[in-house]
Length: 179
Image 1 (cartoon, one colour):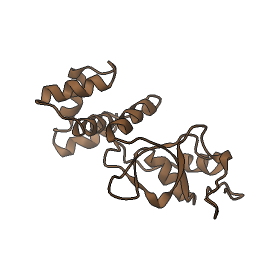
Image 2 (cartoon, rainbow, N blue to C red):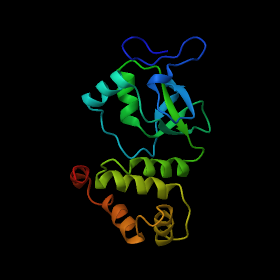
Image 3 (tube, helix red, strand yellow):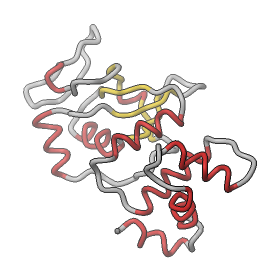
Image 4 (cartoon, helix red, strand yellow):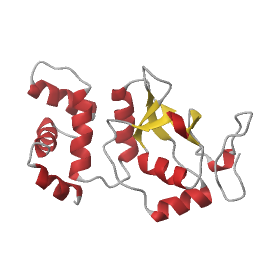
């Protein structure tokens, strides 16, 4: 249940305050079962504005997660900033949308990100994560498979440019994060 200060908690019977949750989610998961997913393309700290919004109004979008096949955990593919902000506010559970595979979670992440601003580096990491989950005979075939998953939103040439950006020297990477 939520306390007077807007903190989401689970009561002894597993109930939560629906008023602080988004309209669509699969379930509410205790924060100790949520971990930063290896395919989460963003590692940005939450802003104070996000913390205050969650504290006052709740979480309006479920985290995108996939279950860990070897442990009772969920890997966060999208929503790491919201997770951090909510836990900073004292939340003990968060709403999630569960996707069974990394590819399905990554595709949902791309759809969810359409209204957000991602840097070149975020997109490059996203496409690299997607590529790491696919199999292909050659690098070009892999790039084409990734492009096909974007439903025509990105060409193979564009995907190649994003992936090539990650092969630039490490000192260039911070510049890619700032666009």
